Length: 348
Image 1 (spheres, helix red, strand yellow):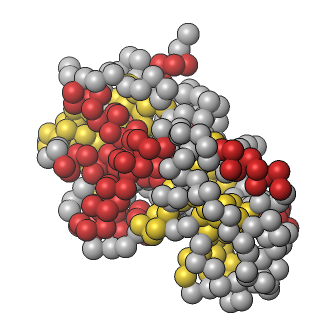
Image 2: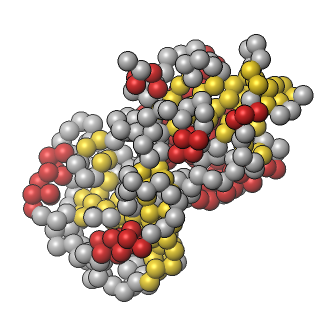
Image 3: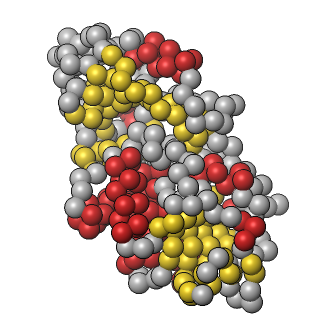
């Protein structure tokens, strides 16, 4: 038997952020991941501090960015990879009224650091943007697929990763710990995304799930090095490749790409991209979403050393380091969780 501090179930954005805290604090741990959950792999990966539909600040945007960017930078250094790309995000205006709302929003103290007051005129003939753009500041993109693939390689090399399904039935309760296979473990963290619905300990948490699909297109004549937010996002990947997304489907809970989503994304992008393009890929995954749009973090109401780290929704790149830190401090230093993310908020 081997005694360890943590078992982590799942290896998405939340898990990776939690692993980084464990490494920094010299905690022993093992990760179990069976590749069943794909929401992080198909995520757009943007860190964008503004809700561009309503021109409002993302929840705790400043706090999240302050924590998140150093985490990704450290991973880049430790693994000798590039995953964080500073990226301009331009919001395409569809009317004078939208322009006016943008400039009104930029006067708010919470949004002033993130919204440029300079109107950007469109000079690209491949884009229909009669009313120009507004620019989001302090934004970028994390290559989530590369992050997860490379981080799992790193975990495997260091002996931290088991690419196996976690078998809930094999968990045995001891006095102040748990026995799982050959491990005596103090804490188990379930960070399985939508897969938590198969977890007997946390299957009843109010996680709804929203399927998202993205397309990757090749558009040699588009020639942009910035992201555009209009009816959909257009995100440059290099080599004339762009991600187009995303869809939202609350009914379908599969990871299977659909013709309907493909057609919807094509129709939307064609409303403002006027050059030819070809579709080179389509991917789908179920985001772990919650009705109040806040993560689900905390201990099981009966088994106090079992924890959930979930519900990151559509903004996992920004939120993951924040919620991971909240949970780590709660376990190790007995600090109170932010009430907005505590799973106890749903207990009447």
